[in-house]
Image 1 (tube, rainbow, N blue to C red):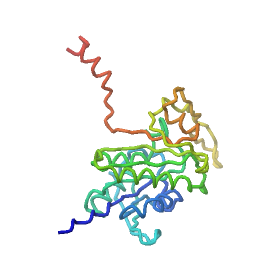
Image 2: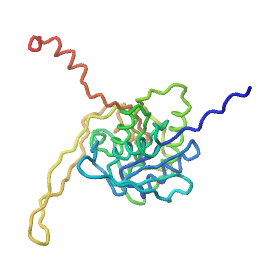
Image 3: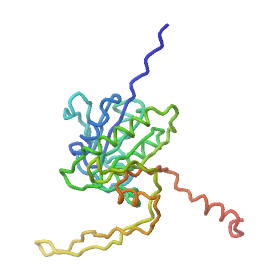
Image 4: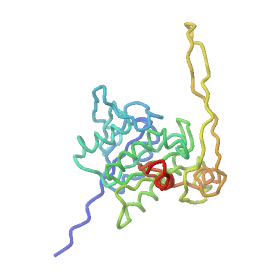
Length: 262
Protein backbone atom coordinates (compact mmCIF):
# COMPACT_ATOMS: atom_id res chain seq x y z
CA UNK A 1 0.00 0.00 0.00
CA UNK A 2 1.44 3.36 -1.01
CA UNK A 3 2.27 5.83 1.73
CA UNK A 4 0.09 8.89 2.04
CA UNK A 5 1.75 11.95 0.52
CA UNK A 6 2.87 14.56 3.02
CA UNK A 7 0.30 17.27 3.49
CA UNK A 8 1.13 20.68 2.10
CA UNK A 9 2.16 23.00 4.96
CA UNK A 10 -0.11 25.94 5.73
CA UNK A 11 1.82 29.22 5.81
CA UNK A 12 0.21 32.22 7.51
CA UNK A 13 1.59 35.59 6.42
CA UNK A 14 1.04 38.91 8.15
CA UNK A 15 2.86 42.22 8.72
CA UNK A 16 2.59 45.69 10.25
CA UNK A 17 3.09 47.85 7.14
CA UNK A 18 -0.39 46.96 5.81
CA UNK A 19 -1.60 44.43 3.28
CA UNK A 20 -0.73 46.58 0.25
CA UNK A 21 2.96 47.05 1.15
CA UNK A 22 5.72 45.96 -1.18
CA UNK A 23 7.28 44.00 1.66
CA UNK A 24 4.35 41.64 2.23
CA UNK A 25 3.96 41.09 -1.51
CA UNK A 26 7.65 40.14 -1.66
CA UNK A 27 7.16 37.73 1.24
CA UNK A 28 4.24 36.05 -0.54
CA UNK A 29 6.28 35.72 -3.73
CA UNK A 30 9.20 34.25 -1.81
CA UNK A 31 7.26 31.36 -0.24
CA UNK A 32 4.17 30.71 -2.36
CA UNK A 33 5.73 27.55 -3.78
CA UNK A 34 6.48 26.11 -0.34
CA UNK A 35 2.91 25.48 0.84
CA UNK A 36 -0.62 26.80 1.02
CA UNK A 37 -0.23 30.51 1.73
CA UNK A 38 -2.91 32.57 3.49
CA UNK A 39 -2.44 36.30 4.13
CA UNK A 40 -4.14 38.13 7.00
CA UNK A 41 -2.79 41.64 7.48
CA UNK A 42 -3.79 45.12 8.69
CA UNK A 43 -5.67 47.50 6.41
CA UNK A 44 -3.41 50.39 7.44
CA UNK A 45 0.17 50.84 8.70
CA UNK A 46 0.69 49.58 12.26
CA UNK A 47 4.41 50.14 12.80
CA UNK A 48 5.49 50.52 16.42
CA UNK A 49 2.30 48.93 17.76
CA UNK A 50 4.24 46.29 19.65
CA UNK A 51 2.00 43.59 21.12
CA UNK A 52 -1.13 45.74 21.19
CA UNK A 53 -4.52 44.08 20.84
CA UNK A 54 -7.95 45.60 20.15
CA UNK A 55 -10.33 45.28 23.11
CA UNK A 56 -12.43 48.46 23.10
CA UNK A 57 -13.81 48.48 19.57
CA UNK A 58 -15.05 45.93 17.01
CA UNK A 59 -12.76 44.40 14.44
CA UNK A 60 -13.63 44.43 10.73
CA UNK A 61 -12.34 41.94 8.21
CA UNK A 62 -12.84 41.51 4.48
CA UNK A 63 -11.39 39.39 1.71
CA UNK A 64 -9.21 40.87 -1.02
CA UNK A 65 -8.00 39.62 -4.38
CA UNK A 66 -4.56 41.20 -4.63
CA UNK A 67 -2.19 38.22 -4.61
CA UNK A 68 -3.66 36.16 -7.42
CA UNK A 69 -4.58 32.66 -6.22
CA UNK A 70 -3.31 33.34 -2.69
CA UNK A 71 -6.15 33.84 -0.21
CA UNK A 72 -5.89 37.25 1.46
CA UNK A 73 -7.82 39.11 4.16
CA UNK A 74 -7.40 42.62 5.53
CA UNK A 75 -8.46 43.59 9.04
CA UNK A 76 -8.93 46.78 11.00
CA UNK A 77 -6.86 45.35 13.85
CA UNK A 78 -3.26 45.26 14.96
CA UNK A 79 -0.71 42.71 13.72
CA UNK A 80 -1.39 40.59 16.81
CA UNK A 81 -5.14 40.80 16.14
CA UNK A 82 -4.45 39.50 12.63
CA UNK A 83 -2.81 36.34 13.95
CA UNK A 84 -5.63 35.73 16.42
CA UNK A 85 -8.30 36.25 13.77
CA UNK A 86 -6.48 34.07 11.25
CA UNK A 87 -6.34 31.09 13.61
CA UNK A 88 -9.88 31.43 14.98
CA UNK A 89 -11.97 32.71 12.06
CA UNK A 90 -10.14 31.99 8.80
CA UNK A 91 -7.96 28.89 9.12
CA UNK A 92 -9.92 27.31 11.98
CA UNK A 93 -6.63 25.65 12.92
CA UNK A 94 -3.05 26.55 13.67
CA UNK A 95 -0.90 27.03 10.57
CA UNK A 96 2.33 25.08 10.28
CA UNK A 97 4.34 28.29 10.30
CA UNK A 98 3.69 32.03 10.62
CA UNK A 99 5.77 34.58 8.70
CA UNK A 100 5.66 38.29 9.41
CA UNK A 101 7.07 41.02 7.16
CA UNK A 102 9.00 41.76 5.14
CA UNK A 103 9.22 44.91 7.23
CA UNK A 104 10.34 48.18 5.69
CA UNK A 105 13.13 49.06 8.14
CA UNK A 106 15.22 47.62 10.95
CA UNK A 107 13.95 45.40 13.74
CA UNK A 108 17.33 44.56 15.24
CA UNK A 109 18.37 45.02 18.89
CA UNK A 110 15.88 47.05 21.00
CA UNK A 111 13.53 47.50 18.04
CA UNK A 112 12.17 44.01 18.70
CA UNK A 113 10.36 45.40 21.76
CA UNK A 114 8.39 47.97 19.76
CA UNK A 115 7.96 46.09 16.50
CA UNK A 116 4.51 45.16 15.26
CA UNK A 117 6.20 42.80 12.81
CA UNK A 118 7.91 40.84 15.57
CA UNK A 119 4.92 41.01 17.91
CA UNK A 120 2.77 39.26 15.30
CA UNK A 121 5.40 36.52 15.05
CA UNK A 122 5.65 36.36 18.83
CA UNK A 123 1.87 35.97 19.18
CA UNK A 124 2.05 32.99 16.87
CA UNK A 125 4.91 31.54 18.92
CA UNK A 126 2.88 31.98 22.12
CA UNK A 127 0.13 29.94 20.46
CA UNK A 128 2.57 27.14 19.65
CA UNK A 129 3.14 28.09 16.00
CA UNK A 130 6.75 28.24 14.76
CA UNK A 131 7.26 31.77 13.48
CA UNK A 132 9.73 34.09 11.81
CA UNK A 133 9.79 37.87 11.49
CA UNK A 134 11.63 39.31 8.48
CA UNK A 135 12.88 42.88 8.12
CA UNK A 136 14.89 44.72 5.46
CA UNK A 137 17.17 47.55 6.56
CA UNK A 138 15.53 49.96 4.14
CA UNK A 139 12.66 52.29 5.07
CA UNK A 140 11.95 53.47 1.54
CA UNK A 141 8.55 52.74 0.02
CA UNK A 142 10.24 51.54 -3.18
CA UNK A 143 12.91 49.45 -1.42
CA UNK A 144 14.52 46.63 -3.44
CA UNK A 145 13.39 43.27 -1.97
CA UNK A 146 15.09 41.00 -4.53
CA UNK A 147 17.83 39.80 -2.17
CA UNK A 148 15.34 39.56 0.70
CA UNK A 149 13.16 37.16 -1.28
CA UNK A 150 16.11 34.82 -1.80
CA UNK A 151 17.02 34.94 1.88
CA UNK A 152 13.42 34.35 2.96
CA UNK A 153 13.04 31.37 0.63
CA UNK A 154 16.26 29.82 1.92
CA UNK A 155 15.43 30.21 5.62
CA UNK A 156 11.78 29.16 5.40
CA UNK A 157 12.67 26.15 3.26
CA UNK A 158 15.22 25.06 5.85
CA UNK A 159 12.77 25.41 8.75
CA UNK A 160 10.07 23.48 6.89
CA UNK A 161 12.60 20.71 6.16
CA UNK A 162 13.53 20.29 9.81
CA UNK A 163 12.27 16.95 11.13
CA UNK A 164 11.46 18.32 14.56
CA UNK A 165 10.71 22.00 15.07
CA UNK A 166 10.11 23.54 18.49
CA UNK A 167 6.50 24.75 18.39
CA UNK A 168 7.63 27.96 20.09
CA UNK A 169 10.43 28.62 17.59
CA UNK A 170 10.69 32.37 17.05
CA UNK A 171 13.34 33.95 14.84
CA UNK A 172 14.05 37.62 14.26
CA UNK A 173 15.66 37.93 10.82
CA UNK A 174 17.12 41.22 9.60
CA UNK A 175 18.53 41.67 6.11
CA UNK A 176 21.06 44.35 5.05
CA UNK A 177 19.97 46.66 2.25
CA UNK A 178 22.55 45.50 -0.29
CA UNK A 179 22.39 43.38 -3.47
CA UNK A 180 22.55 39.59 -3.00
CA UNK A 181 26.12 39.45 -4.31
CA UNK A 182 27.25 41.65 -1.41
CA UNK A 183 25.60 39.58 1.33
CA UNK A 184 28.36 37.59 3.01
CA UNK A 185 26.16 34.96 4.61
CA UNK A 186 23.67 34.27 7.40
CA UNK A 187 24.75 34.57 11.05
CA UNK A 188 23.04 33.32 14.19
CA UNK A 189 23.38 36.26 16.57
CA UNK A 190 22.43 37.62 19.94
CA UNK A 191 20.38 40.77 20.34
CA UNK A 192 22.69 43.75 20.66
CA UNK A 193 22.49 45.93 23.76
CA UNK A 194 21.37 49.21 22.24
CA UNK A 195 18.75 51.91 22.71
CA UNK A 196 17.51 55.20 21.33
CA UNK A 197 18.62 58.50 22.85
CA UNK A 198 15.18 60.07 22.52
CA UNK A 199 13.66 63.51 22.77
CA UNK A 200 10.45 65.22 21.70
CA UNK A 201 10.76 67.94 19.11
CA UNK A 202 8.31 70.70 20.08
CA UNK A 203 6.55 72.33 17.14
CA UNK A 204 3.61 74.63 16.43
CA UNK A 205 0.76 73.79 14.06
CA UNK A 206 -0.93 76.32 11.69
CA UNK A 207 -3.48 77.11 14.42
CA UNK A 208 -0.70 78.08 16.82
CA UNK A 209 -1.08 75.02 19.03
CA UNK A 210 1.90 73.03 20.27
CA UNK A 211 2.51 69.44 19.24
CA UNK A 212 5.38 67.03 19.78
CA UNK A 213 7.26 64.73 17.41
CA UNK A 214 9.33 61.88 18.81
CA UNK A 215 12.93 61.86 17.57
CA UNK A 216 15.92 59.78 18.57
CA UNK A 217 19.45 58.68 17.78
CA UNK A 218 20.22 54.96 17.80
CA UNK A 219 23.11 54.10 20.12
CA UNK A 220 24.77 50.69 20.20
CA UNK A 221 26.63 49.88 23.42
CA UNK A 222 27.60 46.34 22.47
CA UNK A 223 30.77 46.17 20.40
CA UNK A 224 31.07 42.36 20.28
CA UNK A 225 31.05 40.53 16.96
CA UNK A 226 28.21 38.11 17.70
CA UNK A 227 25.39 40.69 17.70
CA UNK A 228 22.75 41.49 15.13
CA UNK A 229 24.00 45.07 14.81
CA UNK A 230 27.54 43.92 14.01
CA UNK A 231 26.33 41.33 11.51
CA UNK A 232 24.17 43.79 9.61
CA UNK A 233 26.86 46.45 9.58
CA UNK A 234 29.16 43.89 7.97
CA UNK A 235 26.60 42.77 5.36
CA UNK A 236 25.51 39.54 7.03
CA UNK A 237 21.89 38.52 7.51
CA UNK A 238 21.26 38.38 11.26
CA UNK A 239 19.11 35.64 12.80
CA UNK A 240 18.29 36.08 16.48
CA UNK A 241 16.36 33.34 18.29
CA UNK A 242 13.80 35.13 20.48
CA UNK A 243 11.56 34.00 23.34
CA UNK A 244 8.50 35.46 25.03
CA UNK A 245 9.57 34.30 28.50
CA UNK A 246 11.00 37.54 29.95
CA UNK A 247 12.21 35.98 33.20
CA UNK A 248 15.74 37.02 34.19
CA UNK A 249 16.89 33.61 35.44
CA UNK A 250 20.31 34.83 36.61
CA UNK A 251 18.71 37.47 38.81
CA UNK A 252 16.06 34.98 39.95
CA UNK A 253 18.77 32.65 41.23
CA UNK A 254 20.53 35.52 43.02
CA UNK A 255 17.31 36.72 44.66
CA UNK A 256 16.48 33.20 45.83
CA UNK A 257 19.76 33.19 47.77
CA UNK A 258 19.06 36.60 49.32
CA UNK A 259 17.97 36.78 52.98
CA UNK A 260 15.55 39.53 52.03
CA UNK A 261 13.23 37.04 50.28
CA UNK A 262 13.49 34.15 52.77
